[in-house]
Amino acid sequence: MTDKDSFMVFSGTATRYLAEKICASLGCKLGNLQITKFSDGEFAVSYEESIRGRDVFLVQSTFPSSDNLMELLLMIDAAKRASARQIIAVIPYFGWARQDRKDKPRVSIGAKLVADLLSVAGIDRVITMDLHADQIQGFFDVPVDHLYGSGVILPYIENLKLKNLVIASPDVGGAKRAKSFAKYLDCPLVLCNKTRARANVIESMQIIGDVKDKDVVIVDDMVDTAGTITKAADIMMEAGARTVRACASHCVMSGPASENVQNSALEEIVFTDSIPYANRCAKVKQLSVADMFAETIRRVINNESISNQYLI
Image (cartoon, rainbow, N blue to C red; front, side, top):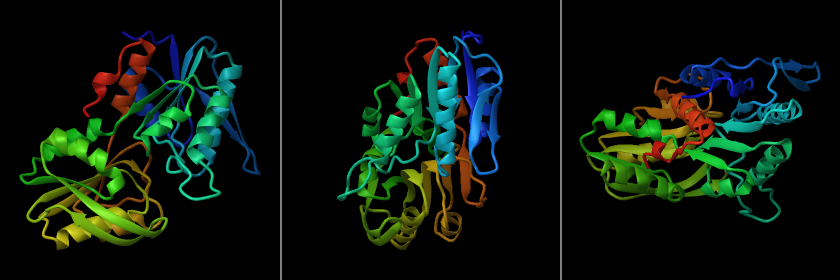
């Protein structure tokens, strides 16, 4: 049982849709938070009810624009100054995660910078999902509960009951994730080897493995412009695949992504609802992770293990 008087859940502007689902699953109400915007774009955060001595869970994904990150930082600071007992940042999508290392000279490591900003603001714990790189957990000096979208995506794939299922990774970097899916589903694994001309632009791609007469499911952590995943789907269909689907945790879907997906060989592409998706595309389906986050929050409150939530 969860003592509903011991914790409170609040949300920033962009992730309120998910916070409301999380609260419904927890059986509590969403806290009253006021965000006041000034004409020059500046904004201020205030809690409209007492949070003194409470465990405060702040639900906010940090996808662009950077206002979402700034909102979260101000929410954390305001909670600290309002004497919250613990401040837990619930970040379904952790932005800037692709900047996790120096891959060329004279560049920033954005993921580390964001981790530092959150720590300085005053967080006591982070709950997040499918970081672009697992080592980002080590950028924090507070506990990180790292969840996986596979908890809702794998059951969906199983329910499709595909006869000749093959799991594919759109690039070598995602091989570990795809291998975990393939092992759980007891099916073959296929890799795509790609080279980039520059960020978001693919130069060439080759398939490593057999996809002829197979039902292929491409797995990834996020889809941005959808260039990689749609090119992979088209190449696999050309190589004789029977059907090609895709699934990813984070629905970034920026720029021409919706058009790319609609015009591709993909039958469908499945995401979680860690990021809202407004540009509707008939091939896009979203699965909710609200229950998974709600259960994690409940276990954190009750000091219970969360490890048995992991399918892989």
